[in-house]
Image 1 (cartoon, rainbow, N blue to C red):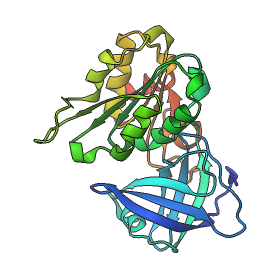
Image 2 (image 1 turned 60 degrees about the vertical axis):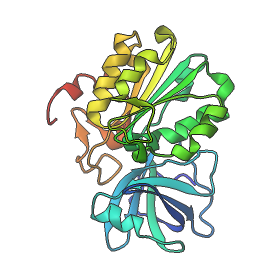
Image 3 (image 1 turned 60 degrees about the horizontal axis):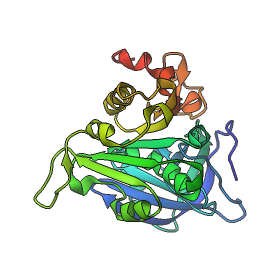
Length: 277
């Protein structure tokens, strides 16, 4: 089941599991109710999730695109609706509209080096792409994942890192602030780009995180020779309809919900330089 992009009516799903990933961040697994059919999506797309009595918000899909029986979303509990979402329990209903938006174009990287850069919860929209890269590993040359987090206990999906490494990914990690147990890199994730060991002229980069991190990471990639049109980013704006009608997510000539959230950096580069646009 892929819900129509013109659909404004939530389809009923049911919560199957919910678990804490890191402080204030939870993963929610849901499945279509009986006779709804399987659900398919492309890595990088999002759903509008509706908690009855609390509201509707956009959440990136963070599970494996191969699994069409259940869907996973990773949610940071920062507002009224997201907090209500993290309090749902197995068996409770949730409304779903989607999937919406553009997706990470893995085909662009076939036969090339791949650089995936994630900042904080920005790893969630990238995780389906990581799963795809692992499943189709022979299609790509090197695949390098750079991860930045504020602190060691805020590293999302850390329990999967060894599995990803064994599946052929090179992973480099940094934190803003270390603790006594941390013996890795300290500093911003952009500092890892220079030691990623990529061939810049033959590299496709996929970047997600806070907007300032995206801009500095893209600049660092271009400094080493990665072309702006070979850098793909995922942007976040206030979304309410998911289909480009309400205008809340407008960025210059684009509506993030339907023209994005994934863009070539060359498309959005100049717009991101304008403060408060």
